[in-house]
Length: 78
Image (cartoon, rainbow, N blue to C red):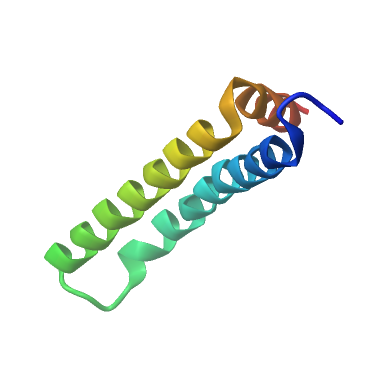
């Protein structure tokens, strides 16, 4: 069994999932300007999307640790 046991493995996978999910907000940035909403509401939606993305990235970084961040960085560079 790896050091840290199964709990560490679960935290690693959950963290990498959160980090990867944080990148899913970027396509929304392209769509937000075309929504039939007021400019203020569009700005608020953009701010909320940004906060959610950075929040998910932060949680994922905390859960997966440095190993998860490095693993995902290698995957994205391919």
